[in-house]
Length: 79
Image (cartoon, rainbow, N blue to C red):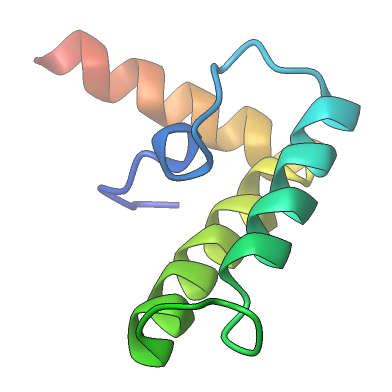
């Protein structure tokens, strides 16, 4: 994964969140920040939507999420 981004923070969830709840949060955020419906700056909405999608791409897949969690834990132990 090798990302400095905290995907849990991007989605505003705890690492202990269950998959169904994670999916619900993802869908709500994408709906809120979609560039076609976001009331603010469209470029900002696009940037936020890309971050949300990147986070969910990893956390939404159980294999990628497990790998991300291992790397995250290892990184925290090094600090």
